[in-house]
Length: 230
Image (tube, rainbow, N blue to C red):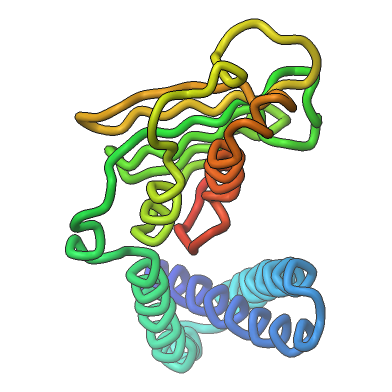
């Protein structure tokens, strides 16, 4: 039984320490840059959890059985409340990145892919895909990693509205070209498909292809979609 109390005390101290660290991180990050602030909160939360783990471990080792049970109850109840609150916040955040099925009703269903060759900007993603069939977007990062996320209904609507209509101008026909080239391709479900090289001549002849490429490249940031990378 004492082993169980020791484990619970260590876990509770770790949770409480992480919560206190997150609170201190939030206070320190107020009014600053969002990215820096996020990193500050994460580091403070990590530091708090490590400190809580150390303090909880020392207490579990030093306290006698009666003191151990009392300390476990004192820390365990707030730790349980904090854990349940964190689970609820995570659930609410997840729900905010989901759209109801009705939000997708009537939207065009398609797959659009933007590709950049090796001579293009090394800081830009070499491949971005917006897949309305799977309701997902995927981005290949310059370092070879890939990220993906849910395709929100608003993003599907905006990209779908930019899909070119009518024949592709001769200046945009997919073929060989030299220099730094972007290629945008699309396939509408039960509809037309197309692919163009965004050469200077094509950009002048088909401005809607430029708009489609721009929206596809921005798909990951047009709406919160809980992205993950690997």
